[in-house]
Image (cartoon, rainbow, N blue to C red):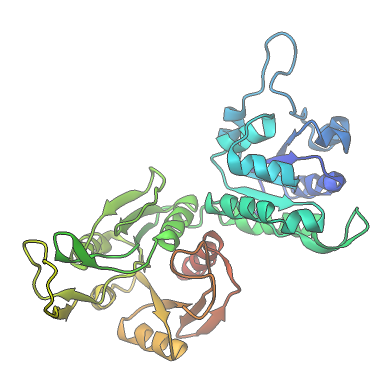
Length: 396
């Protein structure tokens, strides 16, 4: 629901700027309060007078409103808004946003924005598919920005292809669905695990895996945005999270188990996204194992099963979400895990989908529960996190 929501609408120098009038009208019809911020190039395509008449607010374009020292505060706008939408967004503005080139009011507002940011790109097909543009889009997605994919059709250049801004009604519907659920986890305690675990062989070597932690961190940020109190228990990763998230760093499976069992009793739900090592050495050498010509034998024992431990202690008012990364018999194995570990649903990943899972910014999942399965297309991990939390919100 957009009723009562405060939205900053950014408009850039694209022929699609005229469609922003329809977006404004639909936002206001749904009860939203709209403040337009337009770039100098944007004013070449649509006048501030038109936009002001639709919003009943002065349009913001310059840092300084008059020559008397009055100025517009991008910081205040960042605190005021419930969401920011940039539609249309040109290739130039995409690049400035991705690289923090704060040379106009729109970019400084974006950099100060505390609320979710949505971008609707609009450009010619060759500009959109250029590697530099795609790199900027990937970078913005990694920051948590949502990209509303452009449509395919007839373009202002006379060519036909992907690049035209999504239709206004589709954009409004997209935000209506996303912003309306912005605080659907308010008051909930969510426990999330992320990253790999390292099982020591000696003081300098370990057994580990390729997990980057990106999926777990995306889930933590999505829950935070939707009002939850988040505890993130993470293995060794090179990632940062919002200060509002209670981050607990661990290294081994045993350390993760200890923190998880300590925090689960007060959680409404746990999402076990960490790639926990299945085996650990029976003995850890006190000193570095020296290289010799003799074959080294390493005896391993199973690590503790964190998901099974939580499944056995789960209360009826708690939810347990687990991940499964499979290389064969994927759905059958995921269903067995669902039952064995007493989970509410399993998020199935597959190594057979190129450009997903470990180290990637994208993922492609299937959510499997006792009621059935739901498969999703390949998306950024931020968007995948949103899909997963949508499913969780339905059963909390």
